[in-house]
Length: 120
Image (cartoon, rainbow, N blue to C red; front, side, top):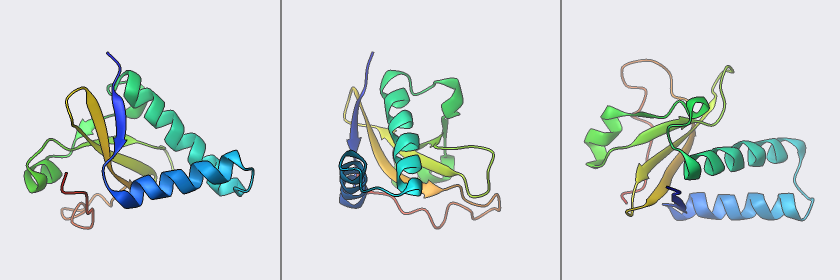
């Protein structure tokens, strides 16, 4: 099964459209190009298999409890300080909706308090 990928909040959709536009028009800087490649790879893998091993997808229970839907986190990058993460839900049926792109929170007890996601 392949999943359709949606961006759940306007800021994420607008960010992606702007980033993609810069890359395609060759006006993106080095960091923007690298970020585009990482996000594109994760989107491609999520659409084919959200449980692909390198994504390390797992439910974030505190966010699931807060939003009333299972919220998943997948690795955008790994093995670096403040590594990026993508937060998503299975919604609508047959789809994955990205509801957050954030740096990995600290490992303290309240680390996910600063994560603000769409109310999708």
